Image 1 (cartoon, rainbow, N blue to C red):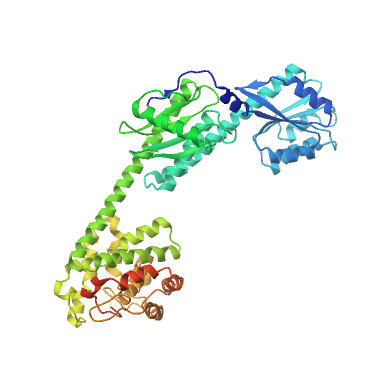
Image 2: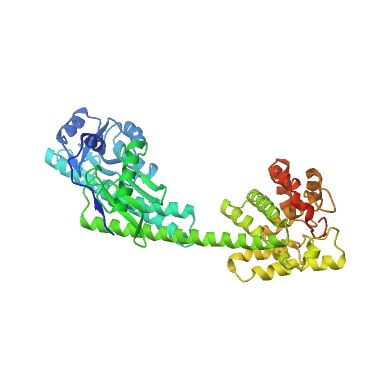
Length: 524
């Protein structure tokens, strides 16, 4: 996978201004103004990894606590021991490590009275990174100490960002093969976090730059999957997005991007499907670029899995529609009836605690509850009169027929159970097996309720539609005998809140129902 690098151009003035805000923060805690001033003087012109030093001063441990809560990204703290108390600096160290749980900031103890805080005791009992007598800290040694501490902070932050990114990737990885939008979002965000750590970016330091972006595109749209940095500069973002997309599609270097910016194409079956755009604080070496290429390949694999998942999901939907269409040729009401059952089922399953994805799956499966009517003769299905006992016995076989049709595909397991058992009752007096419906899935118990309700409020050759309130009362009366009481309670809550009004209106105004026969068990 090729990494496209922008042309090496001088850094623009706006870029320099933005880069100046990417500073290493140094907290100097000392009650002697002269020491603070001398520290500032001796560190003038300090730069590390193309970043300057921002010095924050505190004259007491108390003041330092306030500043630490305001600045979570302090890289190094030079802490005096003796300030408002003889051990104020050591108590501040404990506050940083134990109360703030800040393990990243590098802590350097400075003392002018080493007798009050012996070096070995402090090093053994406090989580510090260095101990210096103030007399030791000449300009050269102070520079060396601060530089080593800043470098240590940067390396720790890189490790921590990569750890966070790896954790997110590993958490999402098991779901990549049963992928959903949520797991894919988590995966991409984890990948981006790793890249940020690799490139010595931070999620808080890039105030006005893009930082990093992972985007995908199809024939029409470019979608940002994950980003770090400020996206409020919409003009600049649109320019970057357009240039990156054009560059990976044409295989040409994008013009006009910042120095050292990189575009990494995402390829599926050798075709570009997206890109990773990064703005590192320093030019990346060859090893870093190779690692980013590996990361990009993982993103590409995730995208390929997503597209396979979408294709499989579309095939499942097409299979449901195909079977439902076949059933509609036998029973003219199927088209409108199954859509209403789908809507009832989705709303009710959500009310009962199902996730959005589960409710959609339940709705799809519910649409095949009467697929077994394919095997029932037209004479019975279209009879204008109520069925006699023998005809009703024949009608009951549609549950067996439906189960037989759907049993061969594991993706249709839910639909198979619903088709087979949506006429079972809570008290075990239903058909075909006469087993209590509590033994079956929530979906089956939901369809049992909404199928009867839809029949009650629909027009039949032998009856007018029931008033919705009367039909709801009939459902309530069946709780604990025909229906699961919990499902009934949730159904009535939604009914009384008007959540079913549009579906009910569609059923009562559907003229197709004038020519349909439904089996007369209980109410239909």
